[in-house]
Structures are given as structure tokens and as C-alpha cells.
Length: 79
Ligand SMILES: [Zn+2]
Image 1 (cartoon, rainbow, N blue to C red):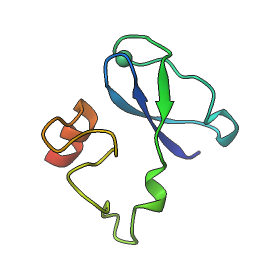
Image 2 (cartoon, helix red, strand yellow):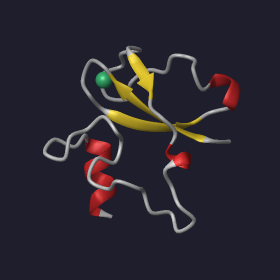
Image 3 (tube, rainbow, N blue to C red):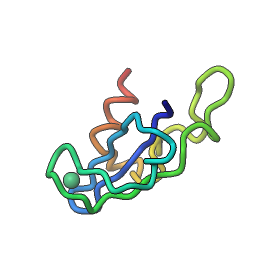
Image 4 (tube, helix red, strand yellow):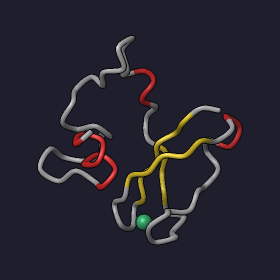
């Protein structure tokens, strides 16, 4: 099952979820605030090379700015 990334428009939380491809665009509730005002972000797969390095590191989720990463991206960059 593919991993999709979503961003909550209400609290700016980025989160990812394993979902069936057919469910990719079905609204998903934000795990932090429960809002369904979320949007799917461009799949990481297109930006991930064979070594798993995310192109354009620093703005991992495409929506966060380098100075204000969301919790998910901050977590990821600290790994
Ligand atoms: Zn939220």
C-alpha cells in the first residue's frame, strides 16, 4: 500500500498515511486537530532517488518553509 503525505490546512500539521490508491484523494482527518480540511501533497516517490534521498532537502514536505518545518518534517530531518 502506498504511503501518502497530507497537510492539514487548519493546524499546518503534515502527516502521512498508508492508504489504498483508490483512497488517496478521499478526505482524511488530521491526527492532531481532527479536521478533515486536509490536502494530499505531491508524492515523495517522484522526488526520492534510488538512495532514498529526498531532493531539495530543507523543505521536505513542499509546504513547510526552511524556517518553519512542520512537526513531521522536523522529525524527519532529525533522523
Ligand atoms: Zn490539523
